[in-house]
Length: 250
Image 1 (cartoon, rainbow, N blue to C red):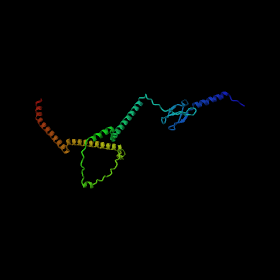
Image 2 (image 1 turned 180 degrees about the vertical axis):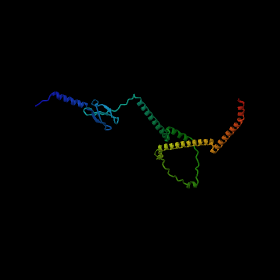
Image 3 (image 1 turned 90 degrees about the vertical axis):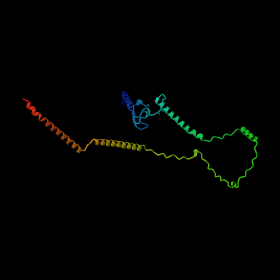
């Protein structure tokens, strides 16, 4: 029985170990089910998914996945403290509004009747007993008053304000897109009207200075006649002067 060389077996084992170490850990994202492959050196660490951007835990070499701890708030962070202050201010404003609504309702409730003390009541009764009272003669009411007995209608119980059913007001839904389109159409119409008015004013101004073609023809004819007559007059005046000049020359 041939026995293999132990050196070869050791080399094979080292090669398989190197292959296992070089192969990445493949797992899926817990949030978007994206298949990822990460180096074995990052086993058990928290990384960000390249697809959804959320944090996931890389499985360990034994295949176990530890849960991700909840993030702790850094109270030294300026942005976080500012956001918490704004939330606290909003909550304080809400509580103040609730108190302002509750105080008028408490004021509307009838005040409880204050019963006088028994000692004060007895003192008042003794004072009234000490005052002498004259006997009053009985007044006989007329027969008509006796016959006419008023019919008392039972008063309907008044329900408290809190139990009254208040119908909500019909809130009309406002379509902002229609309002914006209407405003845009009005602005466009106004701009076109302004341009039309400017064009009309320019045409009116140009029409003031424009003359008809017949007027221009008359002006040109008169100008040509004037120049022709001026040329004739100048030629007549210059004709007797030229012979005298020629005669004087030797």
